[in-house]
Length: 334
Ligand SMILES: [Mn+2]
Image 1 (spheres, protein in one colour):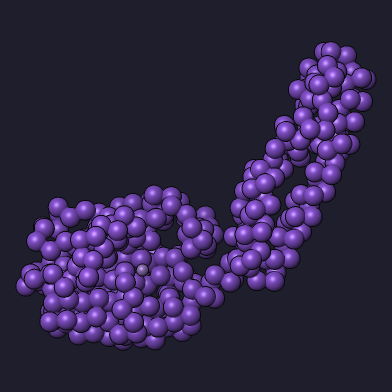
Image 2 (tube, helix red, strand yellow; image 1 turned 90 degrees about the vertical axis):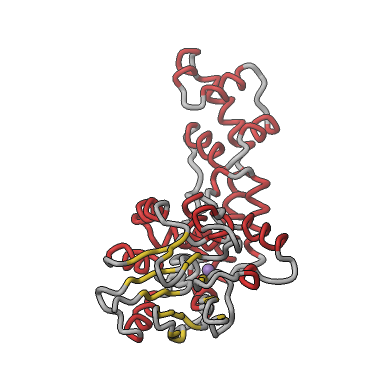
C-alpha cells in the first residue's frame, strides 16, 4: 500500500529529518508531504529544500516562513537563511513561490497553519492556510476563546503544523493532527504515517534556533547596508544591536562607531580641501571633477561645515566626497 508520510515543521533540521525518515522506513513510492516551514531558524535549510526538490513523490505545502521569503518580508531569521543559502537563495525562493497552500488526498487534508471549518480548501484564504500575521489575526478574532480545530467537524482528518504543540503532537479524535513539535527549539521532529495514522518522532539534536541566532549574528550584522544609513540611523542601529549582541558582535559594532566618528571628524578638512581644490582649478576642470558640485559651492562661498554635513548625510556620500578630494577614509570595518 502506498503510504503518505507527513512531516511537521522542519525549519532546517536536516539531520533530524533524515533520522525520522529512516525511522518510518521511507520507501521510494511513499508520498512525502511537508506541512511547510522547511526553512528559517535551523542549521541546514538549503539541504532540506534540496531534499524535497530532488525527491520524486514529494509535496511541500506553503508555510508562513516560505511565504516571508517569497514576499521579501525580512526579519532576522530570514536574513540568516538568505546567507545560509548564499548563491542558491534566489532560485530556492523562486521554487517556494510555486508551493501549494494545501494538499488533499483520499485520506487526509494538509495545511500549514489552519483552515476555516465549513469552507472548501480551494476557497480558503492563503493567509489563514499558511498562518501569516494577518491570517493569525483574523483567526484570533474569529475564535477568541479557542482554536479553529475545535470547530473542525469534517470526517476527513486534517494535518497541520505552525503552532508548537509541545514535545508531543496534538492528536485528537483521530481527525486532528498538529505536528509542530518544536524541532528547531530542541524538541522533536514528528511524522504522521497515513493510512495507519501512526505517529513517529525523533529528538532534536540541539536548541538549533538559539545556536543559529548566535552563530550568524556577526555575519548578518556585517551584511547590513551600513553605508547607506543616515548618521543618526547608524548610531541608533549600533545602540539597538549592541544591547542584544554577543561580545564579538558588540566589539564589531564599537569599531563601526569609531569608524563613523573618524569619518565625520574629517568634515572640516574636507571643506578646506574643497576650497583649496576650487581655488586651483579652471572652471572647465571643476566641471570634470568628481566633486564638482562641492567645488562650485566652495568657489561661490557657499560651502561650510554645516552645509557639507547636510550633504554628506550618509557614510557613503562622505566616502565618495573624501575619495574625490584625494583623501579616501579608512576602509569600513570588515
Ligand atoms: Mn513553523
